[in-house]
Amino acid sequence: MSDQSCIIIAIAGASASGKSLFASTILKELKTEGVNDIGIISEDNYYKDQSHLALEERVKTNYDHPNAMDRDLLLAHLQTLKAGKAVDIPDYSYVEHTRTQKIHHFEPKKIIILEGILLLTDERIREIADMSVFVDTPLDICFIRRLKRDMEERGRSMESVINQYHATVRPMFLQFIEPSKRYADIIVPRGGKNRIAINMLKAQILHLLGKTPHHSN
Ligand code: CTP
Image 1: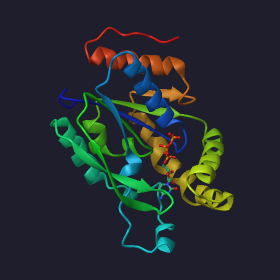
Image 2: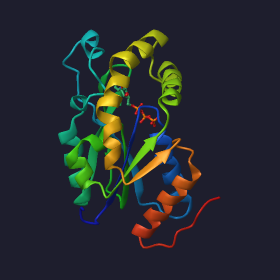
Image 3: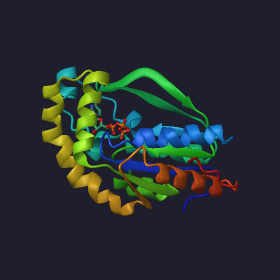
């Protein structure tokens, strides 16, 4: 277990399982309850820079394999934040399949919620995280959400979403993501709208902060 300078909560699960909704709901509700020293970091911002490759090459990358991530940078940032210093998080474009020129300046926080598909597959991330959660949403629901989202928000065609799902998203889920569920402290069925799980996580965070828990109904 890491030191308590900041508390890192890792939230993993399949693509489009509702990780970011789960994380943002916890953050929003805790803020309304007066916990402001809290932030979210997405593993997606740590996809490797591919600006040296042509776009036709970048689309061929397997984005669901651990090697697609710049894990060393993510880990270095988590260590820096644990040491109480700010980091500059890269910005990522799903349309260009690489980093943009932008950065996100992130000040250290008492509570950091980290969300991403492959987090629990990395022993170093499991080690630095103080608590880990696996959002366990049925794959058919994830696929429907992903199809809609990738077409509406990530500039993809239906055919490309389906092809990528068959080629990498589903096989990598079965090979890497699902087996990493065993490392989670808490498994959350159904995803981001699981009210009991949201309340439990909030109560645990308040407990770690030494505050009395308040539950939403
Ligand atoms: N991905 C992609 N193209 C890229 C980079 C990533 O299609 N250039 C996809 C990967 O295939 C991976 C997914 O992005 O499966 C990871 O993002 P996802 O977990 O789906 O996004 P979140 O918003 O975090 O999901 P959730 O709905 O669970 O919040």
